[in-house]
Image (cartoon, rainbow, N blue to C red; front, side, top):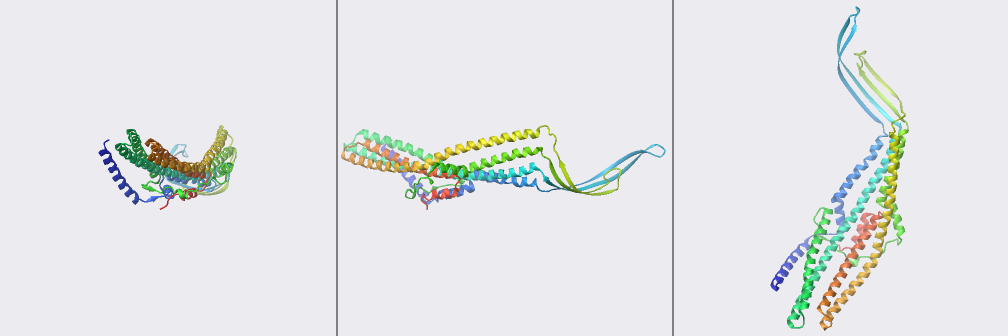
Amino acid sequence: MTAQQFLLKTALACALGSAAAGAWAQAPVMDLKQVYQAALEQDASIRASRAAADSGRERLPQARAGLMPQVSASAGRNSNNLDTTAPNILGTPVTTNDQYFSDNRTVQLRQPLMNMQRWYQFQQAKSVVEEVEANLDREFQNLVVRVASAYFESLMADEQLDLVLAQKKTYTALVDAANKGFAAGSGTRTDIDDAQSRLDMATAQELEARQNQDLARRQLQLLVNQPVAQIAKLNVAALQLSAPMPANLDEWTRKAELASPEMKALQARLDAARREVSKAQAGHLPTLDAVAQWSNSGSENTTRVNSRYENKSIGLQLNIPLYSGGYVNSTIRQAVAEQTRAEESLEALRRDLGVRVHKEYRGVSEGVMRVKALEQAARSAEQMMKSTQMSLKAGSRTQLDVLNAQQQYTLALRDLATARFVYLLSNVRLASLVGDDAMDSVEKVNASLILR
């Protein structure tokens, strides 16, 4: 690349950057709370979960209906063409034809008095609704984590691009200084090549950083179903680093086992499986119904043509199962196996939940120490970079030393930014695992952002 080409490319990039910066400054800024609220309304997964919850809640009134009175009514009217053959007084068969209408109307009321299968089905429906509500709560908690992950990934992509652009600006100045030094006879060709190679690498990293920024922003837009031009950045001065309270991993694990939506959902599923066993066993038990019926019919049989009947009855109906071909015993064995599966799934989740709580607990507690350590490392790297630049002017350091110091400082800033975002995300994930209020988690993180 010639010097003229380089200058033309630099001027074009600056012009495009200025135009983009102007459009960026005019775009509305969304913070984490606004993104989360938009996702609550627009995220397709949450809307599907709400619909699934609405569907699951209907299991309870459906099961309750099995214990309520059942009223039915029927009516019918028929046209009859009756041929009757009978011997006359002389013994000769004679056929007569009658054409008439018959009708019937019936109203029946049936009230279950003793039906254990329907009772256990009603109790099981309560557990099913509890599972549905817990699953919906779990989706809300997952949404917080998904939104926070996408938000911090977008912030990290922005931070990465800013670092690359700053690094590129520094390398450009170093290339210019190396060229001037070489022209003045105080530098070497190696200094120019080193600085130019770093600049070329920074240009490639800029392209990658812009691609990552675009992808991260699109993932965020997917959650809110609208364009997201700008998001609030991290306010380092407002970021409060604090270890988890209480500072006891066992307490957090117990809290997760009691309040985690995942645990609640599987516990409700286990309760429903136990009710299923009881319901299957009730297949051996008799049922008792109270039945009241009114019927009115006309010409209902061939011997009473043109006659009307009105019948009112009330009584009890007992049904005793004697043999069903082994069906009931099979359903019992099936229900017991499902109960065992639910118990083992609950135990597996309990163990896995303990591991995840331990991971996020350490992510918060050790994240505090890591952020503080990296803050000190960034300060040291900055001081080393300044000292190296001063030493270069004094002639005791080379241009390569300055480039290496600049690279080390940039890496320290990148690692520091990553550590801060990981710390915040671990806080959100830990709160989600123990079932804390989702909006409270968002509010706490939002306090660490630059709100406009």
